Image (tube, rainbow, N blue to C red; front, side, top):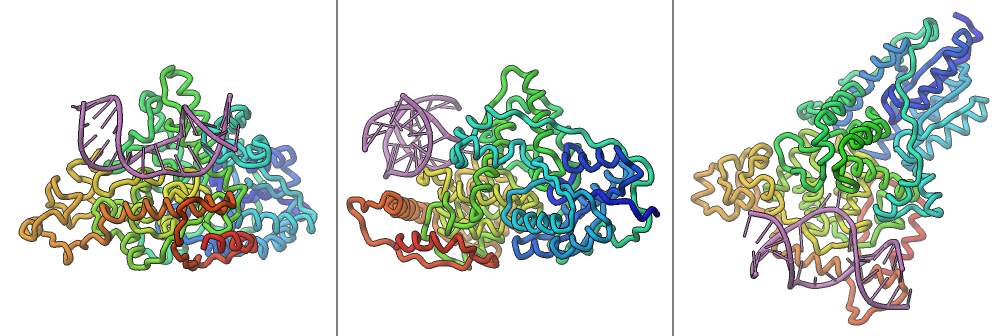
Length: 538
DNA sequence: GCAGACGTTGTGTTT
DNA sequence: CAAACACAACGTCTG
């Protein structure tokens, strides 16, 4: 072993891939230019600090484990391997920099507040130890910071405005995977302490694991992308609102979990889509097209990059202040698929079992939890999704919850999804319900979406009596959704008054607002300022 | 400052 | 059976 060799480190966080990975690519380029001078160590840090920041359910732990296993395989094919290190980055790096004689550290940038703080601290450590750090923006097609600059310092808050900005930006050059390293660049003396974790090490509650319908990893991501792209007619015609939320097999690509972890490059997927569309003169367009779906992701990343409180109502510049109420029993019923609304319950059970539900299914259950029926804060729903979704993504989860609760980006709060009617359009017989709420399997089409319409005798015949075999509905949608529209109207009025500083005609006593606990997350100092503003709402 | 157009994905009834 | 409309009416952007 040559003692003088310095080490080149690429730090994987998201971006768990070797294709189109500029920060990894850079390490390989530098290494190949002077193979006798360097060792190469691609690392992943199992950071226990992440658990203060977010909840990760068993299915997503498994997805991560599979992604790391695949990543190690990809790297070994390139004549290196994955080095997994356990601990907090700020505790680990000083020792690694020293022991490995690190010369260069590269990583992909991330806009999530936890990552921003973490990375700033690591940058500082690196600087103090003379380690050069290079970062690359490759998780999104467009750099959120650049989009904000091009919109004169503020993120665009409508999709159309966002489109107008990014249409003028140039597209990134998509990279292949790097060429194999020459022999001898892998340090020899490493034991198995850097092996990627086993399933048993990561999944603390194996009883929570559902079927492994969407295995993690770059190989599976690319396979899945190719499968989706194979039917070019389908790609060209794709319109998201026309796909079914309750088909038994997904009606969309299910590439979201792979994009979330960066097993698939959004930039590569975008490029491949553009190639196909160039051959298909008649094709759908954003916001409904497949490219449009990628751009929704970019949109939320851009706005979220400008607001550290993007996942909260308080102190969030984009979020309307709405007096949601704490209702633990209703929340619990919703989260576990026991609302008594079969369509809602089927969706929530599919989510818990499989870790993925269709976008429109998310609409239905999110509307139901918040402005539609239960009047519970979108933050509560966000937390449940955060735990259960394979594709959980900080910016997208928060952004979509604000959208659905009409707290930001979407404002037509009087458009309420019916937990009965919405699903019937694409699954009139209720096959989807029968799969995920099997106790209702014998219910006929005429009442499977509204089992309370069956008489007690019929319920016995169908082998499922409400109140004992399946819950009574916890609210009456026809009644509460109208009350909630009124509440939304009142809340919007108060927000307008705060915004304009004027009181409107016919102003009446406002509902008392009780602050609800925000869980583990500590309120940052930024919250305080807007709490003042929030007081004004009373 | 203001009117009008527009906004990925509502429902239920009428024509 | 698809399209149009009422429902009661939001915020953002543009000219």
